[in-house]
Amino acid sequence: MPPPLSVHEAREDVNDLRGAVRQGFMNDQLDLRDSAQMTAEEVKVRDQRNMRILAPVIIRLLVEYKSRVIERSFFILLRGGYFDQLPPELEGQEFEIEHISSVLKADKYNDIEAAWSLIMRAFEVAKMGKPEVLDNFDFDAIIKAHADVLSLPSEFIEL
Image (tube, rainbow, N blue to C red; front, top):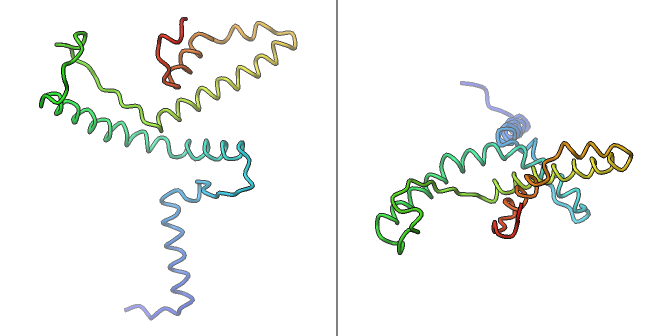
């Protein structure tokens, strides 16, 4: 039987355990502080950093679990007659349910933001006498992707 711990040693053990739990939940990597003095840009950068850390785990959970639950629920309700009728285009066709969560949307939005940031820098280079740098971008695809992330109806964009 190990000798009894002093109060100081017990506190150290508890603090070590707390640290291990925080590290296991990636608290040491996540920036969870909130301050009234934070600027909008600081909040945005903090949220993007946290999203980069959490997104792979959350997306995997959404794809492997939540999407299956939604799809299964939909087809149970469909077989149970809870929906009026499928559109004629879907009658007799196999189709897939696509669930787009706010996390997936935020991840896509970050990609779009990064693209626009790069485009702005490219425009600066173009102004300095290298307009051919803009030939590297498929602006139609970028606008389409942005409209998709914003969930705009397809008839709003003609490309």
